[in-house]
Amino acid sequence: MITSNSNPKIKYIRRLLADRRFRHRERAFVVEGTRWLKELAQFKITPTLVIVTQSYMLQDHVLTLFNMPPEIEPTMVSEQVMAFASDTVSPAGVMAIVPMLSLPIPAKPSFLLVLDNISNPGNLGTMLRTAAAAKTDAVLLAPGCVDAYNPKVLRGSMGAHLRLPIEEMSWDKVETLTTNMAIWIASVGDGVDYVEVDWKKDVAIIVGGEAFGVGHQARSLATGNVSIPLHRDTESLNAAVAAGILIFEAVRQRRVVDGA
Image 1 (cartoon, rainbow, N blue to C red):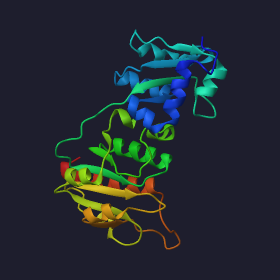
Image 2: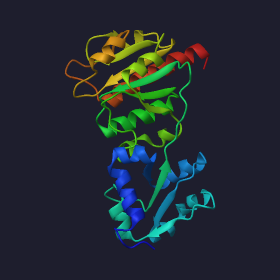
Image 3: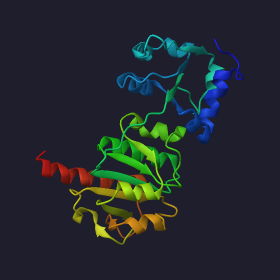
Image 4: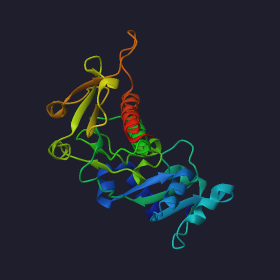
């Protein structure tokens, strides 16, 4: 059992949680909790390390651990070490180091979410979860976005990283990938009503951060602005909520075409 916060495995976990560059250099990230373990087992993804507390091992849901490959033997740690290693106030009792996936973006995508200057981890996590639920082809993170593997993003994404291509991308690459697509910017107040847009075409939605919105590079690519009508006393919607409304209006229109 690991009882020291100075153990190299614990220090490695802490650095992966705290250091964006280190995560991407190592091509690894840290997840926590039974739900994530179940997701890893479902997708047959083998973590490189699993740490658990004795109290977690005594709970019924520890059976999830036995869905892991036999070569992965959980490392026991003390409650104090788990509290130190964890990024949460109330640790779940199990953490895992997971290799980053490189899920391919379709060569000719028909439905993309492009995010610009999304700095709030909770918002990004929710957007990734929504995009995965809608079977969006990919989420493109333009410069200025928070890291997709930030611990708070991972908690909000609910496993989206395992089923959705997520890629940091320069605006030049975004432009290349969205060639011949209609590109709509989510806007406050000015723009086409979102239900009037033809979302059945090959389309990309650009959503900007709540503080500064989208930048000039996003605007230079856009077909136009799209807006969600609001009550006159409401200034704006949360960025993740707005993204969800637009994404699922596109899903609704496409289902009608498909006869669903």
